[in-house]
Figure 1 (tube, rainbow, N blue to C red):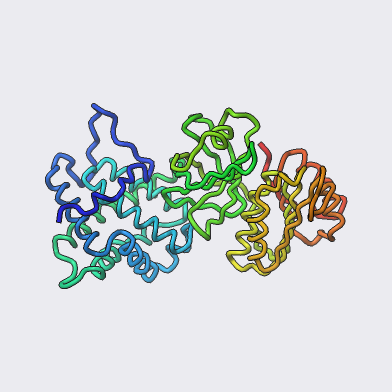
Figure 2 (figure 1 turned 180 degrees about the vertical axis):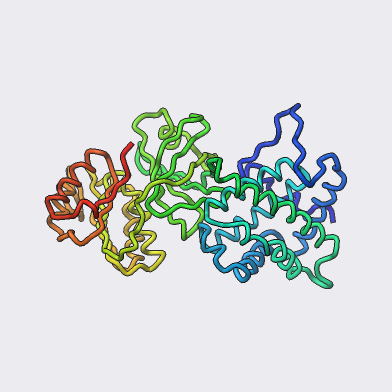
Length: 406
């Protein structure tokens, strides 16, 4: 067979690694000789042929994950995404490996970045020590006849031996270097003339907690990082959701809303913030204004995905009905949770089926909140006014949470 994986897309940007600039020599990695093109080409052929014969990247990835879960039950519990999303990332990783195994500098850099991403998720090198044996078994289980040929087995084992060293090195480097994730835009919906809901898929595992935010850089405005709340759920999939409102057509927000398209890539920094579901079991009061609903949507999603039994009430304050740009999806998430309610509050004009007036008045009218953990997100003036109103309602300041506005 002649490299059956060549027809698959070349995921060159998978881990944010770029080839050396023209005319610049590649640095030789430890343990491999980049001058030995024939040997590297042969390894690539063996890996590609055997991966195809074993059922292809997706099937091998599924068996690999199952074997690793059995060997290290806690490994995938620390990584974002559910089983299907994790298998998809493993399949992309195997495809990337076959495409780049004959390019040692890219391979070293790629596995180093993988190590950094895994370290960010809490994985330690010891949890990966059985990965080579699990990979060989995942390949062997998909082979017909006499199973995995010796040359196939040797090619995979020797490749993983080097890869493990590079991953471990990346894990060590993560203590000194900031991790930046490359993410591809998988969905872009203009919900209002100035607001878009954008879904991004980081190529490498990106850990975050529901309710956190991260800084984003777009190619159009290099070296400028703008913080956005993450509205997705790390437990459900590997997709990060941003709610972006652009006050002008320029800057990072303007680029994201008006000129970003599906297939474009952006860069995301490490998740920040402390707006996460508390462990004390208290019921939740969530209050959002405009796109401040994004982190609160993430908290509701966390409750729904985990089956958390506590009560959660989300007040979403907007000026007009037209500003309820995400009400259908948020209502569906609340319905999937055990005890969640969404109360939109419209301050100007026709309110339709929803409450009208100021969100602070609605909060005072609907209940007594002194026993709740309260989470706020929205414009600075809204945070100030709502915090003052909650104090008057007897809510302990220690139970009121919001990230510092920027």
